[in-house]
Length: 440
Image (cartoon, rainbow, N blue to C red):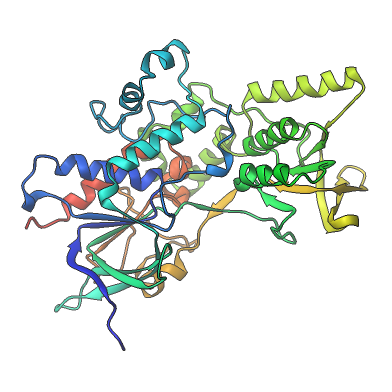
């Protein structure tokens, strides 16, 4: 068998797969660690990203949408409050620090926080290989038969399509979530996931095609934001929000409930019995799942009432309902069948676009890890076992590390895929990598 083409002779201390906020935070932790240290005490790191540049939920960067976490939960502050990679340092460099403070808010615009991420990513760009999609992870054994390294093969997505392989003592998997499409539905020209809301809406608006009706499926924050955005973007269209609840559920952002996102809460969750973990998850899912900010709920209700008064109702809420089928309609449109669950009554809505605000799910890492996946230990529920330091528990002969940034709700709780502890998690992984490293 032909040997893989190695990217270099360097063995990386840590190789990140995916370069969203989680691995960006880790790259900054590595960069700050290396500053001022001699070569033998630095960490050699590389991060792979299949996109041509940094991008985080670009399809939902609605101009007036705000973050749902405090700006202090940025990439660094909870790890190192004096870091010059903080959101406040970004604002100072952009000349907006005083203007931002005058707003008296903890929650920046989402597009501004994305600008902050881009600013931070540019400062560590020397650690990143953009246009590099990881396609395989292979265990590498040393002379003693131990799995001491992983070879990560990546494909050039921006040019030749050729492959190159990098060797690492540790890998950090932060590949994000994938859009969830309900069974029986398929994405297409007229069926979108909300992750593509803005580019697809702009494309539709630029096409000049008439938009008479849009249906949005989902009762969470993204669904409500999509309803509001589409209602404003297509002023002649009827926008129908379909969800199984009676009404939108307000997000619980009260101080005591928000403590579920504290670093200490991760310790409690991690050490708790499985039944307690489930209880904590069920009790506090209203802090994050299928909930909407109260301000947006009230704004949508006010809009609907105002239209009822005026006699022109473009905003409709089909509650306690589900989409039962989607079929081809006249003129290339869709016929969306919606069932009112209490009575079983069904109505067919001729629709120009169906937007699925149906959330995300963890990516299946097995195809990428291949043989390496067989070295990962699993619990009684067939979930991957993960240590408190986010390192996957592996077979005894494995000394190389696999770290998960995301996909660990079963071990670390609600913060697994959220920004709330991104800086703290980066510090925990950084320390774990350092603890297992033999200085050069």
